[in-house]
Each structure stands twice: as C-alpha cells, then as structure tokens.
Image 1 (cartoon, rainbow over the protein chains, first blue to last red):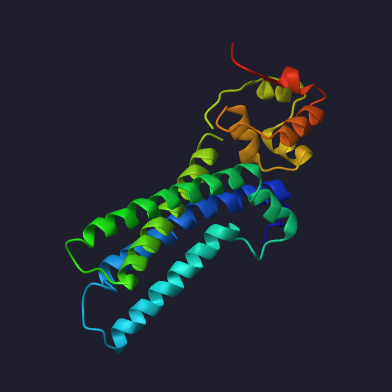
Image 2 (spheres, one colour):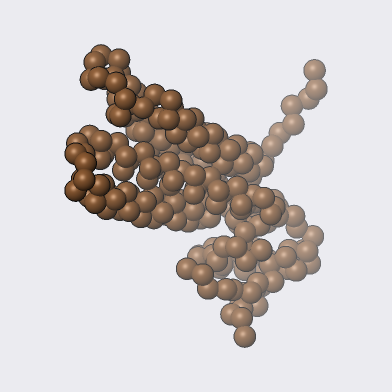
Length: 152
Length: 68
C-alpha cells in the first residue's frame, strides 16, 4: 500500500475548489434536466404525483440555494473551508448573485407581460423566477470559478 | 468593477523562488487567488494587497501600479 501523501491545506482547497466548480455545474444541469423531463407545473392534472413533483422541485431549489449561499464544503475543516471560500470565490459569489438577481427581474417582467395574454398563477411565477435565477446564478458561479482555475 | 491594475507579483514571486502554492500558504489564500491576481483577472482588496506585499518583502506601490 503506497504511503499517504500529506497535502497542505492550500493543495486540498485547490482540489476541492476545482471539484466544486464542476459539481455545481453538474448539479445545475441535472436540476434543469429534471425540470424539462418532469414539467412539474405545466403538464398533468394536479394529483398526488403532481404534488410530489412540486415538492421535489422545491427541495432541489432549496438545496441549490443553500449551496450558493454557503459555497458548500460544510464538512471540511475550517482552514480549508476558509481557503475554498476566500476573496476570489466571495467575489465570484457576489457576481453570480447579481446575475441571478437580474435574471429574476427579467423573468418577472416577462411574466408580467405574459399575464396580459395568458393566466399565470402565483406558483407558476415563483417556479419560473426561482428556477431561472438560481440556475443562472449557479452556472455563472461555476463558470467564474472554472475560469479562475483554468489559467492556473 | 473592470479597472485594470498592473502588478509585479509573478516577478517578485520568482525572485524569491516561490511557487503560487507557497505564496498562497504564506498569505493565507488559495492558489486560485494568487493566480487570478497575477493574471490581472482579479483586483485584490487593500488588505490582500498589503498581505501580499508583506509576504514578498516589498511595498504595495512597487507590487501594484495603475496603468499609464
């Protein structure tokens, strides 16, 4: 059995940060794919299965929001977590949240216009605004993190 | 914020034979941060600029310059 190589906190943080960039993008892609496949709001009658899809969407969106808010890595030791979420990542987080905010505003304004032609329920509006803004914010964060690592 | 800031981080790091990871450890940031500052992708905060200058034994003014 090969000897365990002891890695410094900076090396561990580097590896974790790279994995996070890919993981966030993958989680967001799965989230969006599930929305396309399951159509939790726009297909099917409001039965038990339909309700389960809505609950699953809410849980998924909540988990992704938590990931965006904390930067993940809650189980890492404090030193590594601080390095993973250092100044550059916090800057990326702020940019991503800003992008998500503007996507939410544009989606909301689009729904306002749409509601003049088609009935839009409050739940449908929340679903579209949250799904689009959370997904775009996470993809923006992932891209910024990936770009920061790419030129390393 | 899209201002530009020239820096001599890579030269100063090379002068002391430090890798990006070495400097990151000295300053207490990730290697990604050192890399993005070196490449001008990220403009550091005043605190980080001071810590970088201290770690490299130089002044902030000699490490970072506004473009002419």
